[in-house]
Length: 139
Image (cartoon, one colour):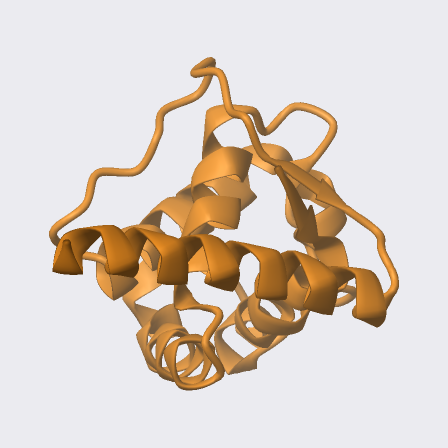
């Protein structure tokens, strides 16, 4: 399954380029990111992307090598280990009842560049699949 990189980036940059990332030592206290994380979670859910953001972060945590650095933002020079810590904290804060993947787990999701209309088509197809599943529940 493919997930839109620009969609993921639109949420994660609010964390990696927010006020906490501009502190003298952005990795000293991850709770400094909590306000931005809460807003990202609320916005993703309100825009219908909560599941996709969760899936994308989980995918990045499972296989960070060569992928996670793309989401560092343009401010502080976060390394992969920093991003793993921040995105693990993000995952645990937004979805406290779920456990994030740890490094090395296989993921079936690719985060790739795509046109907005392609992402809209994927969303529509998965929504149609969900609607079909709902019909099965009524039978």
